[in-house]
Amino acid sequence: ETGVTQTPRHLVMGMTNKKSLKCEQHLGHNAMYWYKQSAKKPLELMFVYSLEERVENNSVPSRFSPECPNSSHLFLHLHTLQPEDSALYLCASSQENRGDYTFGSGTRLTVV
Amino acid sequence: AQSVTQPDIHITVSEGASLELRCNYSYGATPYLFWYVQSPGQGLQLLLKYFSGDTLVQGIKGFEAEFKRSQSSFNLRKPSVHWSDAAEYFCAVGPGGGNKLTFGTGTQLKVEL
Image (cartoon, rainbow over all chains, first blue to last red; front, side, top):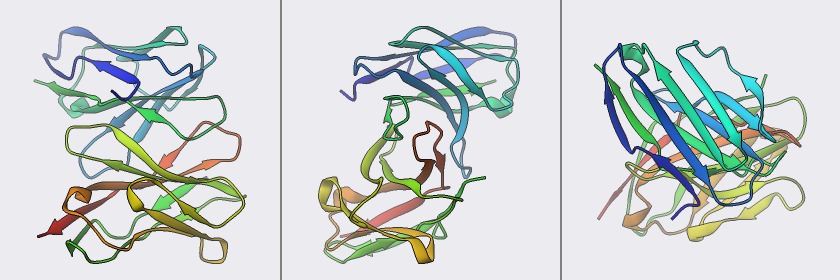
């Protein structure tokens, strides 16, 4: 148990579907992150939430929509995705202004 | 802008041999530096971190890393590798007091028995 739980672990969706990824942390952290991990590419920071406010959006397409209803939960809403969006999506949390993240196990997303 | 280079994509070592994984960073001030490990199908786990002070830091699983400012490096070492160390290793750099980490492309470690 890592303290950061992501669901589902695997997701296959069509390009016209709408789905959501969920992340939950029980570590008392106040910052949460979405990263995209594609083969042979560095981890790409997508969104940062600090104290439940979005503080960073790294030019992510609008077909990805994050939501952070409280400090323990983070969602990534997906709609009209493209095949190139297939990747491992990782959620992480940390204390504000500290880089020692705790990662979840990720959601393996396949867009068909 | 901060960046991280891990020059070795793949490394193979024999069990019991020593290991050094290279990491070079680019950052304008004193960075926070990290090493993470990722096993197949899992998220990343923090091995060790450097914020300040002693430039040789100890981590979990017998790993250590040394911060060398003059070389902009933060290489990861282990004196004797175990088969269970086979995984992908990521170096990361972040601004002091900030949240945003930049990761390298990773080094895949294979351990031969």
